Image (cartoon, rainbow, N blue to C red; front, side, top):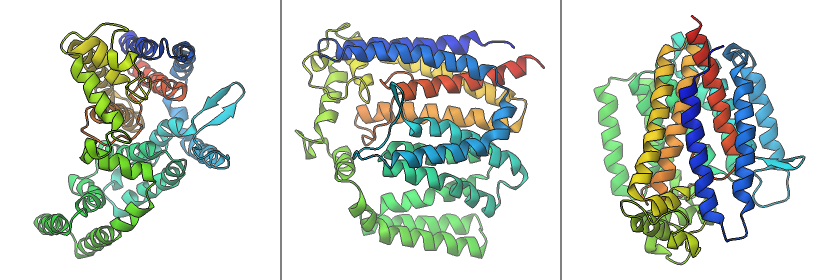
Length: 395
């Protein structure tokens, strides 16, 4: 079986950059073991990649629903713990986060479902069944609470339906609940959204049943949004308020974002140098080794460093998208697009939140942010991609 050394090299370069960033973020803080742990998890991740490289993708196709049931059980088990935050399960000396691995499992499960119904991907039943497939894991991870992973599931559904060939009209209709919720911040904004929605439905000549259904959903979400807002955790409401105005709570919820923007901006073109960032060294920047690793990179390596990182992610995504077009089977093609969607979304949202362009959601930067489960997950994805690539070479 052929091995794609280019794909491996990009993933390894990103992971090593992550370890350097983590080291520079924790040195002198008493958390020096974090970069050593990340290095150990990198070795485990590479081992997982080689293991999955040897497993034909058709095996994942056949076991997709078994994987799905298994991850549902694991996610449910996390909720029986006594802690307020219930994201990890202890396995020997290690703690693993099932919600991270559920992302790849959902890629397999949705890929199997859509592959089985390629001729009917525009059917309302198939689309609704796809939505119901993500509902159990979505609510389980949100209860942990891990809203970021729940959002990833929603984006994944959209991307994989697109990959399977669902019409743009139905993809737009999938977005209408989110648009209705966002526009419900003020009744005038919601009314404008509602009128635009009616115009689009008429313009695209949707069936009367679908027209009525979409309108009812839009009205229901608009009316229920205040209730949903009241049920969010206080820290989640604060994150949204801080996104809209970072100085809403400059010494509380807004502190991270303000310090992140200062760190990135102070790096200039070339940065302050490794271990020389003042925001990092003086501990002004919280979560600098995890959610805000990009801020550390921007401060110490400047604009040039961030461009290098973004270029590596661009190369990785280009290789994955090319692989999706060349994949031998519909399942492999859809799975590849799903993996690309997860990586792109997490890169985009993580960097956007460090710049104040998106709410702080706790979504890690792939291969970079500290976290064993996250790092192993993305190397597992590389392993799946390696197998798909090897099948193309062997034609």
